[in-house]
Length: 230
Length: 238
Image 1 (cartoon, chains in turn blue, cyan):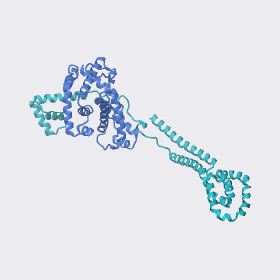
Image 2 (tube, one colour; image 1 turned 90 degrees about the vertical axis):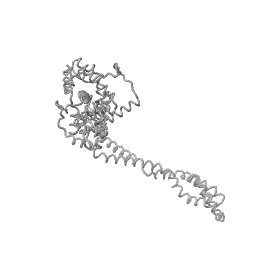
Image 3 (cartoon, rainbow over the protein chains, first blue to last red; image 1 turned 180 degrees about the vertical axis):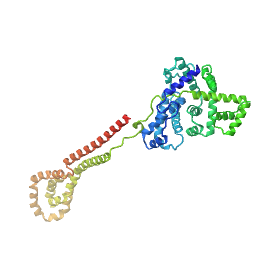
Image 4 (cartoon, chains in turn green, blue; image 1 turned 135 degrees about the horizontal axis):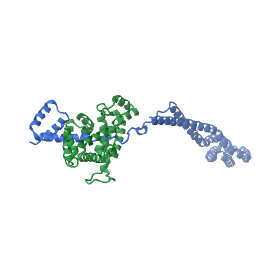
């Protein structure tokens, strides 16, 4: 049952992939250095090609850090705008890591704004005090209502645990485990030493594991599946 | 044996393949013998696995930038800077004509005041009590206030020498006084006519310059807006 849910989830993801990403997950050939170079000379078309390529990664990073779709979309847009304006400051290396730095900066700005002007959510809260969200993939017709509910619970539990992490741990774990950057890329993106990345990631994983332990009854299928896969 | 935080760090890095071969070998041998270490590694692996299973959401919309958002202006047509400069110069000239014409009536009395001493010398320079009264009367309409003290001073300066010619003054005085009613009228008209003639830029030229300015400005605006429209159309087609 749990296996089926994840197979369905992955299929639904594949169906929702942008045109630039092939089904097996490999990115279609794109001359990234050439696009970056022409974008640095002000070519907006080249930059927009890069935007289409990386927008999902940036949006997901912002979503996992902020935990809100609309705020994540705003932060993503702001990050791309800032990236275009400061493209000349890009001096090589992983472009994805460089873009992720702009989006994390936009997220930090947003969180600072929220601290200054706290707002009350309009949507109803769940029993554990978290705001209810409605993921887009809930509308996926391939999943039964029960499967959708389980998938929603899993995502909700993970998001809840991520939000309980300190911001600097959350950023590292999102970049390394969700976006799949290696340690050097994460270190370059958030400008901290490699040792700090290792330490933060280890702590973040431990804390997440502890937090997810509380959802054991809620998410037994997910945990069992993980153990089965290992 | 419980795992230290250093062990947790090593295990986490080991999972990601970030340890060198020596460190990895050492840790693997410890893992074989230490159950608690294995349990920690399982926990870390689970946490990492669950995070990796988190579905990647698709962006709710495209975040591509428009030229307006990026602050990119459409390229101006080649002729645009020429027309813009010409329009600016024409506008400046147009304004200068008003300034020059506006200043000319102020300068006119000064110009008119310049021959006043010569006029005063002829009329009021004769001295005596009678000419002293009649000379200002003649000059008043022509030169207004500034001419009067000058004429008076000239008259008083010349009184001693003029006193010797009393007879001539007496004969001249009626002549000077007599035409006063006739000479007063032209004296009032005379200063106005040169002011009108001295206007540096005529109204016709001003109107012509205004029209030229307007045409140049409109042409520049049209060139710019048409290129902007073309740029926007091209962008929307993409």
